[in-house]
Amino acid sequence: MNEKDIEKVYKVRDNSHSPYSNFKVGALLKCKNGNIYTGCNIENHGIQSICAERVAFVKALSEGEREFESIIVIGGHKEDINNECMPCGYCRQFMSEFVDKDFKIYTMKNGQIKEYTMAQILPNSFNNL
Ligand SMILES: [Zn+2]
Image (cartoon, rainbow, N blue to C red; front, top):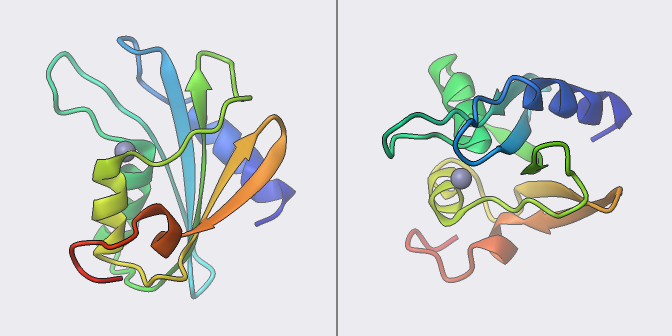
């Protein structure tokens, strides 16, 4: 992860469609081969909203990617990006299908980068990461 990656996350976050929650999230998924896929959260009237993390994963998976290194997730209400935005439970389970226990999750809190592994954010998972 570098400054350029973080800039890309902020940029894709601007594409968020979140008129109901005003919670805008951007994500950048890095594959082991170096390819990058971004995503933002997209809401609608119903309950079929999709998180930024899953958008990035679905874009990558649909292009044939299967080896993933890390994801950056930055989000918050409107322009607030000081509070840490962790992947939701749904995304944690979804991501665990495609990554190993050492997959890295990066977030931001008060301008500081925080790092986690998949095993840390989804311990004792259903698929035994
Ligand atoms: Zn989620």
